[in-house]
Image (cartoon, rainbow, N blue to C red; front, side):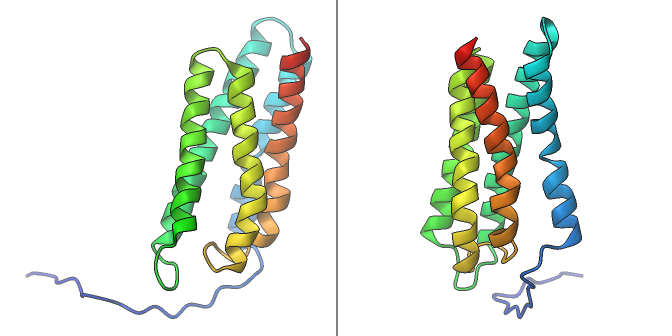
Amino acid sequence: MTDTVPSSVTFTITEPAETPWLGVFFGYVAMVPFAVGTLVFWLAEGPWRGAALAITLFWGCAILTFLAGVRRGVSFRTPGGVTASQIVTMLWLFCLGFAALVLTALALPAWATALLIAGYLSLEVFDPIAARKLEAPLYFARLRPVQMAIPVLCLAATLVLLLVR
């Protein structure tokens, strides 16, 4: 028995502007390590401080590259097809996340932190715009500014301490 794949398909969807419960849950749970890592980095001494910094930066890289994948995945279902801004945003986020990963591995945490701040700040600004252009879920317009403020603030506090000490 052979299943054939249709040559095309049309979807009709209804998407609420309200953030789904799982979007809120997973969106904010993913931000907790930023807050905890930054707090430990500021308060701990010795190897705990270095471990908190490394884990926070690696987490930031992982989440940023994951969000690049989210942007690419959404582009497959964009009305009218993928847009250039979706591809550029995906590449921007992925390259920032990967470069920050390399810089973290090379023990250049201030540079890695700066790149991560740029990535999360861009999500805070561009995802609401993408939602209004139907290039991202509608609820990104409300979720992303508040959600992305958490890593931006945490990473900014981390960068301050890196530059001061």
